[in-house]
Image 1: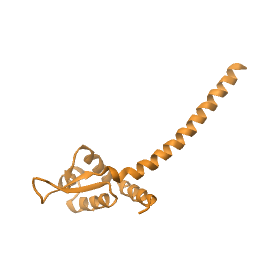
Image 2: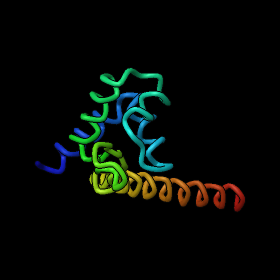
Image 3: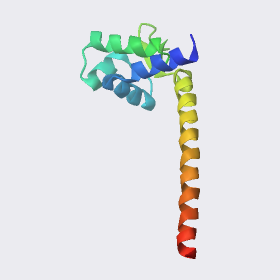
Image 4: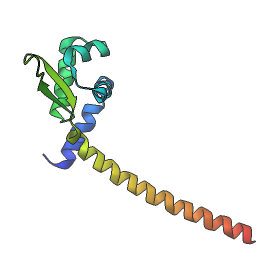
Length: 116
């Protein structure tokens, strides 16, 4: 999958407020789907659909619980956000350059005013 497609998929996954809430919850620690459903006020099947989107986008990974192999734990997958982070870093760089140019222009204009 091309980088642009991965970014599109990541943004689409994060466009939903429930999925963003799941990401926030998983920042704290890995959780079971049932726990995520309860914390978000969703039904189990609805949470399963949200987790599927997050897994497909690479933001969330699932693993078996070591104590009970029937239990799946969901956790954040940093690599799933890497492409979006790189894209955002490029945008930040663009705006930082523009703001620095504006700052220099404003300072030069202020000096000219003070000199007159």
